[in-house]
Structures are given as C-alpha cells and as structure tokens.
Image (cartoon, rainbow, N blue to C red; front, side, top):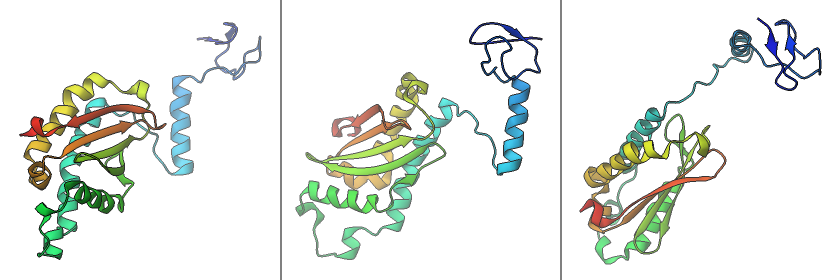
Length: 199
C-alpha cells in the first residue's frame, strides 16, 4: 500500500520516509507509531499518554470538590478551635474568606486529579470565594462545554448544597465561583453558585 505525500500528493513506497518527488517528510503509519511509542516507553521509562474521556474529567472534578474540602477541614483546625474567644460571626465575612483563601493557597498548586490542578483560591469582595482551576493537557478546543454544563455544574451545585464542610460558607451566604482555564491558561468556563441557588 503506497503512502500519499501530504505536500504534493505524490505516491511513495511504504518504506520511504521522505517523498521521492518533493522531499517532504511522509506521515508515519499507525503500525510505526505504535512501535515508536513502545520504543520510547522502554527507553525513557514512561507510558504513552492516553486520551482522557470527557466523562472522566467530569467525575474527577466532582470527586475532587468533595474530597478537597473534607481533607482541608480535617487537616486544618478551625479558627474557633485555636481561639475560642473569637466570635466568627462578628468578624467581617470578607476578612474570614481572605484568611481561608490564604490558608488554602499554602497548598497550591494542588494536583486534584490526573488532569485538574487547583491553581489558587481568591477572596473577592461581596462575600465571594473563587477557585481557579487549570485543566492540564487539554486545550479549550478539546473541551465540550455542553458536557461540562450537563454533568459538572449540577454536581458542583449538589456538593455546595450538601457538603457538611461547606456549612459555614452557606451560613454566611457566600457566593462560590469555579473558574476553569485550559493548559495554555486560556479561560474555558466559569460556574457561579450564589446563596439563592443552595438555600
């Protein structure tokens, strides 16, 4: 089976690496790609990357949200436990959120799962906390926003409503923003959960 040159469309023998007509590098056949990947894996000691299914992305992001707050709450004692005389309800909520963001940023960037990294957390005015995520190895063009809106957003809302670790944020009527960017830092999407959505 001859190989067609992508540059001049000339026919070449399968053994040829360069086009005999124009000298352009010919595409590697699938069999050669597989052999090349196996050779690289043996020589460099790694496995070739597999394409990540969008549903897996959804599952990883949703699972992380619950797990991250659970671990964070277990590993970081509350301000009440450190200083019982401080009444958190008397502190301005924005100041408390700034402290939460500062504490969380000590562990950032945080590899959430195979493709998601929590870059940082920001306390914004008007009782708003923003989580900035980066999706590694994925560009904006590869992301199906309809899939994210259909599977990720409802699960983020459900976790915001039901997660026991988020009760103090719900009590203070905090708005939570989830901001996602691709591997190049290009903004992909944002999901905002307002108090009227979780009450």
